Length: 458
Ligand code: UD1
Ligand code: MG
Image 1: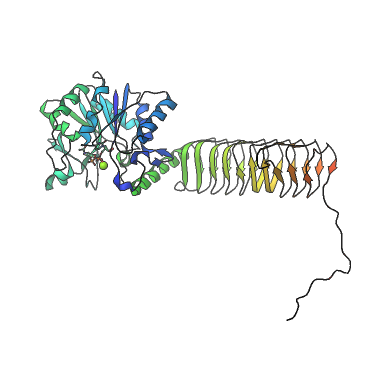
Image 2: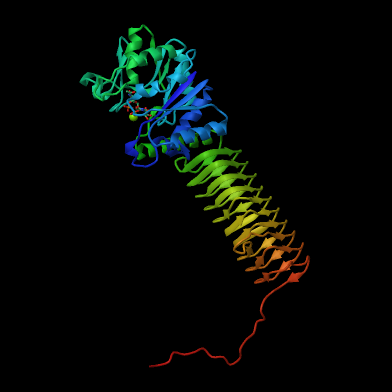
């Protein structure tokens, strides 16, 4: 089939410099949702009609085409003279032997199943329209039927009182036999209330030509809901998140509140995963069996192994976490963090570009950056790996079974040998030998007969 996505409208009501179809829903531009759904139908031709927003829309389309290895054409519609005029811009790209599906770039949540049903209903020789009964159809095109058969679509602004009472609306999504589409578009006129070339006028032409007009319906009204304002964008975001939450619940994930989770990417969960309220997942996040995520955590491109407990208020990005570990509360794992099994990273500990092997612990207030840490290492409170001299970054190596006392600074590059102990308060500037106590600390003295100063009376 051919798929044409209409995305030339300007979206004035978004009150934004960004073209409407580039506004994100679940972290992904609206148009990208539609392109991804269209790609799911494996179309022979896919063409996006753009107008407003300069090069931003075709640039985004080119990026998607490149990253997915698919052919996506774009065509400029300038000026924008209506939905029929928009589809005309795609005509040179369309293959006559295949039906053409028209989608809207600002209607992000239509499912592939719904589109397949429409395509099936239309076959190769019928005009198919995706319609829905709406309690409040205001502003939308109405489906006019006679003896149950669709005879035309009338726009709100052109409709009579009686037609405005019709609740069945045109979603705008259609499947059309391509040779007919070409003929009908050529015959469109713009003598209507808006002075536009309406794609919807092809319906009456189909009826006149004896081409059967059929309809199919989506499983939910939200599937055909468009975004014209930030209010509608926010409503669809919530709807989409609720759909994701329900899918997670169906697969056995425990969500403390399905209305308080945000997945902006792909969240893959094993068995018996529990997620508390207010968590955000971005990119690809994998949670293995028995993982628990506490309230208000943000996880971006992360992998968490079996049985690990992430306590509340953690920020985790581009990190892998081993099994049976304890993270947080208030931990920050930055890109390049790889933690082994049974690792404890506690409150106000930041880890970056570092590996921490099994059974090691940094429980309080530490910075571990550009470090390689062995097994069973204890990092005390307030420890800092000083990895940056203002110009370059250097590594710290801490071998197995090391004890790093509180408030120690390790000035990289530096290595702490296996089983070494660093005394509290040490500023380590040279390698510390294995198995020994290393200490750098000024001697403690007590001044006899010293008196506190007293306030001088004026
Ligand atoms: C259109 C339909 C209406 C339907 C409604 C569903 C027509 C004449 N009317 O109405 O029956 O109920 O959608 O939302 O088709 N676009 C372009 N170029 C243009 C005009 C529009 O690319 O010149 C794109 C828009 O970016 C948008 C889509 O087409 O993605 C629909 O445009 P919109 O202005 O919202 O159409 P409506 O008049 O609301
Ligand atoms: Mg609209």
